[in-house]
Length: 296
Image (cartoon, rainbow, N blue to C red; front, side, top):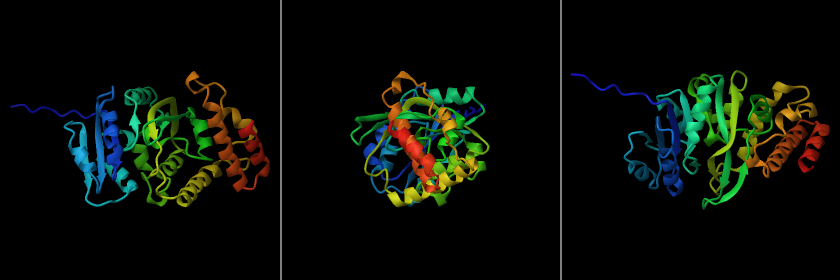
Protein backbone atom coordinates (compact mmCIF):
# COMPACT_ATOMS: atom_id res chain seq x y z
CA UNK A 1 0.00 0.00 0.00
CA UNK A 2 1.35 3.43 -0.96
CA UNK A 3 0.43 6.75 0.56
CA UNK A 4 0.15 9.97 -1.39
CA UNK A 5 2.83 12.48 -0.46
CA UNK A 6 1.42 15.86 0.40
CA UNK A 7 3.25 18.61 -1.41
CA UNK A 8 4.25 21.80 0.38
CA UNK A 9 3.16 25.00 -1.39
CA UNK A 10 5.63 27.68 -2.42
CA UNK A 11 3.90 30.67 -0.76
CA UNK A 12 1.92 31.25 2.42
CA UNK A 13 -0.59 34.10 2.35
CA UNK A 14 -1.17 35.33 5.91
CA UNK A 15 -4.25 37.36 6.83
CA UNK A 16 -5.63 38.31 10.25
CA UNK A 17 -9.35 39.02 10.59
CA UNK A 18 -11.22 40.77 13.37
CA UNK A 19 -14.86 41.72 12.72
CA UNK A 20 -14.12 42.07 9.01
CA UNK A 21 -17.41 40.84 7.56
CA UNK A 22 -18.07 43.92 5.42
CA UNK A 23 -15.20 43.45 2.98
CA UNK A 24 -14.01 39.94 3.82
CA UNK A 25 -15.46 38.08 0.82
CA UNK A 26 -13.80 40.48 -1.62
CA UNK A 27 -10.47 40.05 0.13
CA UNK A 28 -10.64 36.26 0.34
CA UNK A 29 -11.80 35.80 -3.24
CA UNK A 30 -9.12 38.13 -4.57
CA UNK A 31 -6.56 35.66 -3.17
CA UNK A 32 -8.36 32.49 -4.20
CA UNK A 33 -8.62 33.85 -7.77
CA UNK A 34 -4.90 34.54 -8.17
CA UNK A 35 -3.23 33.43 -11.40
CA UNK A 36 -0.52 31.85 -9.24
CA UNK A 37 -2.08 28.82 -7.57
CA UNK A 38 0.65 27.13 -5.50
CA UNK A 39 -0.06 28.73 -2.14
CA UNK A 40 -1.70 28.14 1.21
CA UNK A 41 -3.98 30.79 2.69
CA UNK A 42 -3.50 31.06 6.45
CA UNK A 43 -6.43 33.03 7.87
CA UNK A 44 -6.29 33.86 11.57
CA UNK A 45 -9.73 34.69 12.93
CA UNK A 46 -8.97 36.87 15.93
CA UNK A 47 -12.04 36.29 18.09
CA UNK A 48 -14.42 38.02 15.70
CA UNK A 49 -17.88 38.74 17.07
CA UNK A 50 -19.54 39.30 13.70
CA UNK A 51 -20.06 36.80 10.86
CA UNK A 52 -16.38 36.70 9.82
CA UNK A 53 -15.84 33.12 10.99
CA UNK A 54 -18.94 31.88 9.16
CA UNK A 55 -17.80 33.63 5.99
CA UNK A 56 -14.38 31.97 6.14
CA UNK A 57 -15.91 28.55 6.81
CA UNK A 58 -18.23 28.94 3.82
CA UNK A 59 -15.31 28.44 1.43
CA UNK A 60 -14.56 24.86 0.43
CA UNK A 61 -11.02 25.44 -0.81
CA UNK A 62 -8.20 23.17 0.45
CA UNK A 63 -5.72 26.04 0.27
CA UNK A 64 -7.45 27.81 3.17
CA UNK A 65 -6.04 26.97 6.62
CA UNK A 66 -8.21 28.48 9.30
CA UNK A 67 -6.57 29.36 12.62
CA UNK A 68 -8.87 30.48 15.43
CA UNK A 69 -8.05 32.69 18.39
CA UNK A 70 -10.72 31.90 20.96
CA UNK A 71 -10.65 35.53 22.10
CA UNK A 72 -9.45 38.76 20.54
CA UNK A 73 -5.66 38.85 20.91
CA UNK A 74 -4.86 41.77 18.62
CA UNK A 75 -3.22 42.16 15.23
CA UNK A 76 0.39 41.62 16.29
CA UNK A 77 -0.33 38.38 18.13
CA UNK A 78 -2.41 37.18 15.18
CA UNK A 79 0.24 38.01 12.58
CA UNK A 80 2.94 36.25 14.58
CA UNK A 81 0.66 33.25 14.98
CA UNK A 82 0.06 33.25 11.24
CA UNK A 83 3.81 33.27 10.64
CA UNK A 84 4.32 30.36 13.02
CA UNK A 85 1.56 28.37 11.28
CA UNK A 86 2.88 29.06 7.77
CA UNK A 87 4.50 26.07 6.10
CA UNK A 88 6.64 28.04 3.65
CA UNK A 89 9.45 30.57 3.83
CA UNK A 90 7.77 33.01 1.44
CA UNK A 91 5.04 34.98 3.19
CA UNK A 92 2.57 37.23 1.37
CA UNK A 93 0.63 39.61 3.60
CA UNK A 94 -3.00 40.40 3.01
CA UNK A 95 -5.58 42.47 4.90
CA UNK A 96 -9.26 41.62 5.24
CA UNK A 97 -10.47 44.87 3.67
CA UNK A 98 -8.19 45.08 0.62
CA UNK A 99 -8.22 43.49 -2.84
CA UNK A 100 -5.23 41.81 -4.46
CA UNK A 101 -5.00 42.14 -8.24
CA UNK A 102 -5.13 38.63 -9.85
CA UNK A 103 -1.48 38.71 -10.96
CA UNK A 104 -0.08 39.90 -7.64
CA UNK A 105 1.28 36.62 -6.24
CA UNK A 106 2.60 35.53 -9.63
CA UNK A 107 4.56 38.75 -10.11
CA UNK A 108 5.94 38.81 -6.58
CA UNK A 109 6.84 35.13 -6.53
CA UNK A 110 8.70 35.48 -9.83
CA UNK A 111 10.50 38.56 -8.51
CA UNK A 112 11.62 36.82 -5.33
CA UNK A 113 12.74 33.76 -7.26
CA UNK A 114 14.79 35.92 -9.62
CA UNK A 115 16.20 38.07 -6.80
CA UNK A 116 17.27 35.76 -3.96
CA UNK A 117 19.11 38.64 -2.26
CA UNK A 118 15.84 40.52 -1.65
CA UNK A 119 14.11 39.88 1.68
CA UNK A 120 11.03 42.11 1.32
CA UNK A 121 9.23 43.20 -1.83
CA UNK A 122 6.13 45.40 -1.87
CA UNK A 123 4.18 47.07 -4.63
CA UNK A 124 2.54 50.34 -5.48
CA UNK A 125 -1.14 50.61 -4.57
CA UNK A 126 -4.42 51.81 -5.98
CA UNK A 127 -6.25 53.55 -3.16
CA UNK A 128 -10.00 52.95 -3.11
CA UNK A 129 -12.72 54.26 -0.82
CA UNK A 130 -15.13 52.30 1.36
CA UNK A 131 -17.35 51.69 -1.67
CA UNK A 132 -14.48 50.33 -3.77
CA UNK A 133 -14.26 53.43 -5.95
CA UNK A 134 -10.90 54.61 -7.26
CA UNK A 135 -9.33 57.50 -5.30
CA UNK A 136 -5.73 57.73 -6.48
CA UNK A 137 -2.60 55.78 -7.44
CA UNK A 138 0.33 55.75 -5.04
CA UNK A 139 3.73 54.87 -6.53
CA UNK A 140 6.48 53.15 -4.58
CA UNK A 141 10.22 53.61 -4.23
CA UNK A 142 11.79 50.70 -6.08
CA UNK A 143 15.45 50.51 -5.02
CA UNK A 144 16.96 49.30 -1.75
CA UNK A 145 18.86 52.48 -0.86
CA UNK A 146 15.93 54.73 -1.70
CA UNK A 147 13.61 52.66 0.49
CA UNK A 148 16.04 52.64 3.41
CA UNK A 149 16.62 56.39 3.26
CA UNK A 150 12.88 56.87 2.98
CA UNK A 151 12.33 54.75 6.10
CA UNK A 152 14.03 57.54 8.02
CA UNK A 153 10.97 59.71 7.39
CA UNK A 154 8.07 57.30 6.97
CA UNK A 155 7.05 53.74 6.14
CA UNK A 156 8.02 52.98 2.55
CA UNK A 157 6.07 49.74 2.22
CA UNK A 158 2.31 49.33 2.03
CA UNK A 159 2.10 46.44 4.49
CA UNK A 160 -0.62 44.33 2.77
CA UNK A 161 1.35 44.44 -0.50
CA UNK A 162 4.46 42.84 0.94
CA UNK A 163 5.94 39.43 0.29
CA UNK A 164 8.88 38.53 2.50
CA UNK A 165 11.14 35.70 3.56
CA UNK A 166 10.07 34.28 6.90
CA UNK A 167 13.46 33.26 8.33
CA UNK A 168 14.94 36.79 8.39
CA UNK A 169 11.72 38.16 9.87
CA UNK A 170 11.74 35.59 12.64
CA UNK A 171 15.46 36.18 13.23
CA UNK A 172 14.76 39.80 14.23
CA UNK A 173 11.82 38.84 16.45
CA UNK A 174 8.84 39.10 14.12
CA UNK A 175 6.23 41.73 14.86
CA UNK A 176 6.69 43.48 18.23
CA UNK A 177 3.88 44.54 20.53
CA UNK A 178 5.89 47.60 21.56
CA UNK A 179 5.04 49.20 18.20
CA UNK A 180 1.37 48.33 18.00
CA UNK A 181 0.53 51.42 15.93
CA UNK A 182 3.41 50.83 13.49
CA UNK A 183 4.16 47.12 13.69
CA UNK A 184 5.20 46.87 10.04
CA UNK A 185 7.33 50.03 10.01
CA UNK A 186 9.16 48.80 13.12
CA UNK A 187 9.82 45.44 11.43
CA UNK A 188 11.29 46.99 8.27
CA UNK A 189 13.62 49.23 10.32
CA UNK A 190 14.94 46.21 12.22
CA UNK A 191 15.50 44.32 8.97
CA UNK A 192 17.17 47.26 7.23
CA UNK A 193 20.66 46.74 8.68
CA UNK A 194 21.23 43.29 7.23
CA UNK A 195 18.71 42.68 4.45
CA UNK A 196 17.73 44.16 1.09
CA UNK A 197 14.41 45.67 0.05
CA UNK A 198 12.53 46.36 -3.18
CA UNK A 199 9.17 47.50 -4.49
CA UNK A 200 7.51 46.66 -7.78
CA UNK A 201 6.20 49.96 -9.04
CA UNK A 202 2.82 48.69 -10.22
CA UNK A 203 -0.44 48.70 -8.19
CA UNK A 204 -0.93 45.01 -7.53
CA UNK A 205 -3.20 45.79 -4.57
CA UNK A 206 -6.29 47.92 -4.08
CA UNK A 207 -5.87 49.50 -0.66
CA UNK A 208 -9.14 50.47 0.97
CA UNK A 209 -9.28 53.67 3.03
CA UNK A 210 -12.17 53.88 5.46
CA UNK A 211 -13.02 54.95 8.98
CA UNK A 212 -11.45 51.96 10.74
CA UNK A 213 -7.95 52.34 9.26
CA UNK A 214 -6.78 54.57 12.14
CA UNK A 215 -8.60 52.94 15.00
CA UNK A 216 -5.53 53.19 17.26
CA UNK A 217 -5.68 56.98 17.22
CA UNK A 218 -3.50 59.66 15.69
CA UNK A 219 -1.44 60.22 18.85
CA UNK A 220 -0.38 56.57 19.12
CA UNK A 221 0.38 56.38 15.42
CA UNK A 222 2.53 59.53 15.50
CA UNK A 223 4.43 58.37 18.59
CA UNK A 224 5.22 54.93 17.19
CA UNK A 225 6.10 56.16 13.70
CA UNK A 226 8.42 58.81 15.13
CA UNK A 227 10.17 56.10 17.18
CA UNK A 228 10.70 54.04 14.01
CA UNK A 229 11.96 57.10 12.15
CA UNK A 230 14.40 57.88 14.95
CA UNK A 231 15.82 54.35 14.88
CA UNK A 232 16.48 54.51 11.15
CA UNK A 233 17.57 58.18 11.09
CA UNK A 234 20.46 57.64 13.50
CA UNK A 235 22.17 55.45 10.91
CA UNK A 236 22.77 58.52 8.71
CA UNK A 237 24.25 61.05 11.12
CA UNK A 238 25.43 63.80 11.00
CA UNK A 239 23.81 65.05 7.74
CA UNK A 240 20.75 62.87 7.94
CA UNK A 241 19.44 60.56 5.20
CA UNK A 242 18.34 63.18 2.66
CA UNK A 243 20.85 65.97 2.08
CA UNK A 244 20.41 67.58 -1.33
CA UNK A 245 23.14 65.44 -2.90
CA UNK A 246 21.13 62.26 -2.20
CA UNK A 247 17.85 63.50 -3.63
CA UNK A 248 18.27 61.79 -7.03
CA UNK A 249 18.40 58.44 -5.24
CA UNK A 250 15.16 58.96 -3.32
CA UNK A 251 13.34 60.95 -6.03
CA UNK A 252 14.45 59.47 -9.39
CA UNK A 253 13.01 61.41 -12.31
CA UNK A 254 12.28 58.43 -14.52
CA UNK A 255 8.96 56.75 -13.84
CA UNK A 256 6.47 54.55 -15.62
CA UNK A 257 3.76 56.19 -17.71
CA UNK A 258 1.15 54.78 -15.31
CA UNK A 259 2.29 57.17 -12.57
CA UNK A 260 3.02 60.25 -14.63
CA UNK A 261 0.22 62.24 -12.99
CA UNK A 262 0.74 60.92 -9.45
CA UNK A 263 4.52 60.88 -9.11
CA UNK A 264 4.81 64.60 -8.33
CA UNK A 265 2.22 64.35 -5.55
CA UNK A 266 3.96 61.31 -4.10
CA UNK A 267 7.38 62.96 -4.19
CA UNK A 268 5.94 66.12 -2.66
CA UNK A 269 4.55 64.05 0.20
CA UNK A 270 7.99 62.48 0.73
CA UNK A 271 9.62 65.91 0.82
CA UNK A 272 7.10 67.03 3.43
CA UNK A 273 7.88 63.97 5.54
CA UNK A 274 11.58 64.82 5.42
CA UNK A 275 10.86 68.49 6.14
CA UNK A 276 8.99 67.45 9.27
CA UNK A 277 11.68 65.02 10.40
CA UNK A 278 14.53 67.49 9.81
CA UNK A 279 12.58 70.12 11.75
CA UNK A 280 12.14 67.68 14.64
CA UNK A 281 15.91 67.37 14.80
CA UNK A 282 16.63 71.10 14.66
CA UNK A 283 18.01 71.23 11.11
CA UNK A 284 16.00 74.20 9.86
CA UNK A 285 18.07 74.64 6.69
CA UNK A 286 17.34 71.20 5.28
CA UNK A 287 13.78 71.33 6.59
CA UNK A 288 13.14 74.48 4.57
CA UNK A 289 14.83 72.99 1.48
CA UNK A 290 12.54 69.97 1.60
CA UNK A 291 9.47 72.12 2.24
CA UNK A 292 10.30 74.28 -0.79
CA UNK A 293 10.88 71.19 -2.92
CA UNK A 294 7.47 69.88 -1.89
CA UNK A 295 5.68 72.91 -3.36
CA UNK A 296 7.91 73.52 -6.36
